[in-house]
Length: 319
Image 1 (cartoon, rainbow, N blue to C red):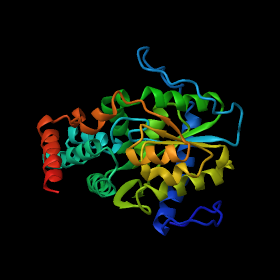
Image 2: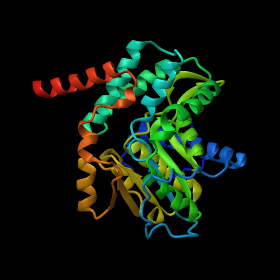
Image 3: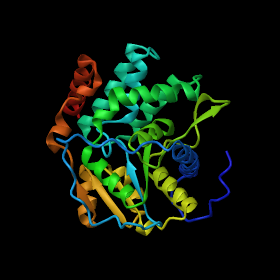
Image 4: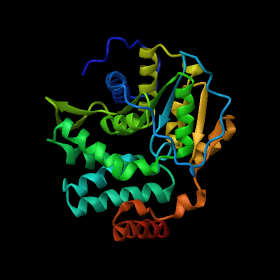
């Protein structure tokens, strides 16, 4: 896949596959954003009255056309991992067997109990998803994704983060999700929240059918930074006037690109880095300890999730 012509040479430390993933994601994001704008979707539904509201920040600056906001998805905008919730929905529709659901549950349990994103486990989750969707039509998975959002994701959106995103929209700025989740899933979530669009992992498709391969690599770590940089170039944005939000230290490359980095529900490493660099922090969790030690009810199959949690505890004791 050739790089889009509007990209310019630049210094970077990311691998060639990270660059390819970032550029492919930026190109896909711009195309889907045009579709969302043409659809003229209604504005986001107001948060429930009992939901906590984030204090209005001094930033963003209203009317700044050179600024935009970039939000990580998993545990920043939404509790848990989007790829896991998508896997639950596919299992319900008999796309795969119970044994594979157990694998998804194990990956989600590790993510929740460890309190950080583990690249190996995230890669394993995406490999599972790619093998499951191989041979299916993109349009089919998009339609199913709409249903899955309503079933498993809508109630897991952090009201505080959503309020931050809405503040940027109210200021007349574009707001993008930036996630390792499939770009199709991310685009559905962005549209439901009334955002501009999404940067996500691009799965290869031929004639509208998934091949089971990726374009480049998962949009994670340095690849996210490359995607944001590419999109900013295409949209003629000034990154020093932009904002980025994430919970994970893996996104420090993306956060470091912008002039207004925010640590949202941060893991230990990101919290430390944010404090050292005087970045703003927001924590919308009811209790940080509960996040680290609580068994994820999201698994939907209690025995599987409980078994995964026990296995992690046993693994740690053996160390």
